[in-house]
Image (tube, rainbow, N blue to C red):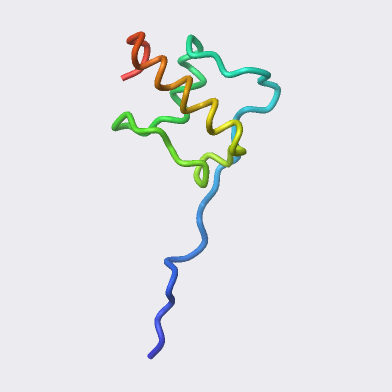
Length: 71
């Protein structure tokens, strides 16, 4: 019996970055959508963000953590 080598299709949710020009570390409401309940940054394959947006998100989340806005 042959088994699948991959677990199945990856469930993506579209990036909620439509209309957002720059990602601000002070906008914790937006950044909270891209962080797991344990405080980890969600990967781009789940968020649907482009590579550039993902880098901006990661940078903003790290800065918000240092400022104490995010956990």
